[in-house]
Length: 405
Picture 1 (tube, helix red, strand yellow):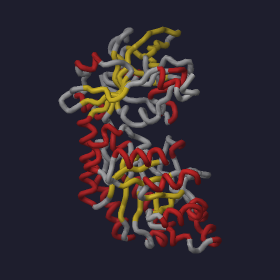
Picture 2: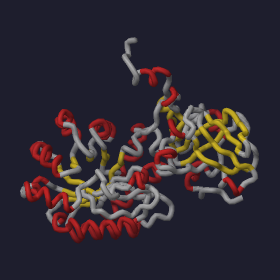
Picture 3: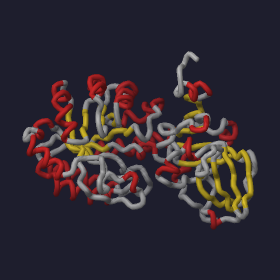
Picture 4: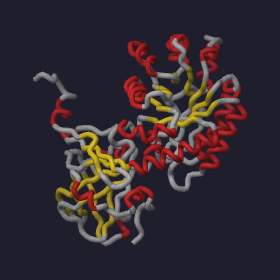
């Protein structure tokens, strides 16, 4: 039967469940070091060919035990605030630390500037408030711009160019701020935009046209331009040559150093979530398998984005003899991963392997309903699996009250 996903999410294991998976505790995340290294090499090759600088966006992948695999190929890390900035500085030492936040807290700024090399502000207000302080400490200062150019479909929650967006400064907002403070551009070293989500370079090309049209005059005064994230660079079939042309265009037209800060591309198809069937129930015409993994707790993008993750050996629900709805064990009625097709009925104890589970999982999971957090393991190129961290009751409890009770 025709499978629901190409082999890319499971290429690291050859499209089959390795025998050692059957011995691992479930649920657990498994990060494949060879797949991670392959992604890093692709990103490093892009940087070497073009002169751009590539950062790891830690919001998507922040398992720092794996940073030594990525670091040789990257310029550094991108952070969304103080804690990620500190993590990048400590766990990828000697590399650049870039930070963007929609709004910074005054009481955190001193500490943040100890870790950050580049700091990007979201609005002229924030630039005015903290830009002088950042410049005085020798930091490179940037402004996030909103080119008001939407290229997404179906991911409205991730569209920073949607009407009324809180992210980035529009040209009208910038011009209004200049009327009040004409010296604002003197604070800036660079501009930053982030408008893409799991997209190819054609969307970047369109966005660059809008950036040049609306902010080209300001860009010519800058030292760098950050293309942000959302570039699916390591996905099979991604148009890297077009990306390279976009980078060259910015370098030639504006004389800037180009940064990219992919998160997903760094760990794309480099992880798995292993889970077992706890129960199988029948409700009318619907067969439901309850797993020990939860969409709400362990793969929250399934509900938030939403999307249906690839599942090894499964097909689209109407393309196989047995249609099964997979759900988690929580009390949330909507804790549903999706409907899948199988060649045979599922049974209690069956092992299932979801793909592309290194990104937006371990850094976003939660303990709703007191669900245990899955252990995190790595898999070496020779197939050896190692637990890098595991969690228990204390990890659930300490977030909710006094530690001495």
